[in-house]
Image (cartoon, rainbow, N blue to C red; front, side, top):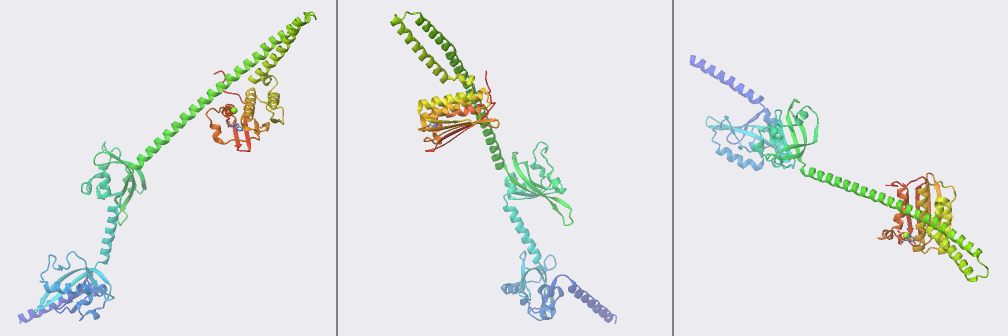
Amino acid sequence: MSSTSDEVARVHALEAHDAQLAAIVRAVKLAVISVDETQTIVLFNPEAEAVFRCGAAQALGGPLDRFIPAAARVAHRQYLANFDGRPGKRGARSMGGDRILTGLRADGKEFPIDASIISTEVAGRKWYTVILRDVTERVRDRQQLQFLSNIVESSSQAILSRDREGTIMSWNEAAAHIFGYTQKEAVGQNIRMLFSNEASRDYTGLAERAMRGEPVVNFETRRQRKDGTLIDVEVTISPIKHDDGSVVGTSAIYSDITERKRMEAQMHKLINDQRQAEAQVRESRDRLRELSAALQIIREEEKTRIARELHDELGQALTALKMDAAAIASDLDPAQEAPLKRTAAMKQLIDATVASVRRISADLRPVMLDNLGLVPTLEWLTRQFSDRTGIRVDLDIPDENLGVSGDAATAIFRIVQEALTNVARHSGADEVGIEVRRQGGNVVTRIRDNGKGFSEPDTRKARSFGLLGMRERAYVLGGDMKISSLAQKGTQIEAVIPAFGTVQGRGS
Ligand SMILES: Nc1ncnc2c1ncn2[C@@H]1O[C@H](COP(=O)(O)OP(=O)(O)O)[C@@H](O)[C@H]1O
Ligand SMILES: [Mg+2]
């Protein structure tokens, strides 16, 4: 009786237990499939339906094989045949070890699964229950992670991460290469080991800035290697955030910019050297120019003095001589033929000498330049030139009142004089046009011939100082000179000179 009621109670308890188990199997988020010894499916829970896209009605009574990819079926049978049914540590034995197994859905798609198996024996018959999970997402995440880590590892830039306290969490190959610490040595250390030894005085707080949300992009700074040497780096730092948005650390990408820095320094040095060299060249050129200006002044003053002395003193002495000779002649008796002839010859010689002195003096520097001015002097010069060479000169000075300073007049006169000398000496021209006109504050002088012209290199002849001298005369007055010459087309010299220009450096 009591045994019967005990029996009934036990049966009730068992039924309750079974019902509870069945409810769990239905609700659990794991696919649960049981098969008998013939691999025929006897249990197929709702999660199994979802995972395999197959209703329990279709699955039950069918072979398990339909959920196993063809390639794995033999192995699976083998596995079950050898399975001793003893559970592993967690009660069930995981299938495939660490390998990811593959399931086959009703729609023919294969997918990765993580499965465990339990075998039970009831009344001498073996049952196997496979508990499994679709791990497509986990596999994908793991692949993605692998992918990212491959990128990080193969990067030529040092990529590392640290937590809020500065403890290094990750450290790639390039970081090992650039900073000299292996991954093992670096991970777990504090990031401050990369800052200069002297009490981390190079610490720049970049990571703290990044954690506060300030961008730290391509920041140039220095870090210390394991061997103590400093290295120029460029760093970009980003905060690492938790899902909830809280910042848990930073990741940093470092580029070694030693080489770039070296190149930059070299470049700066080169540029500096060049600037210095240029400044030196400029200075020595200015010096030369000053010297040439000073020499020109001295020569001009010397010529002026000699010309004046020749003209005035010698001229006066000759005039006195001529008057004396005339006085002697008038005192002589007309019968004294010989002395009369002598004095006549003397007067002639004196006249010729006066003419010579005038010419020499004028060649040195026409006194009329100072006495009468530029325009009459140019007229005289060109007339003389034509007479001597037979080359026709057309002198065009539209406004006689040029209003030039003494220095400007001297420069223009000398330029015209040298240009005419060149025409006679080199051009083979038979016509020269000279034009002098005021243009604003400048006097523009053009000397154009119809000769054979010359090409640029000729002006660089070792001893050709004529054109150079003309140009210098223009320069020292703050003016400029241009030469344009075409073979067979003649030559034109154009000098632009400030009308009131004065030569700097007089008396120095
Ligand atoms: N008007 C010109 N026609 C042709 N060639 C010229 C003329 N002026 C200058 N040159 C050429 O330019 C060169 C340089 O002239 P220049 O400096 O005055 O030196 P130099 O007269 O002592 O040779 C001359 O040797 C000549 O070849
Ligand atoms: Mg010359």
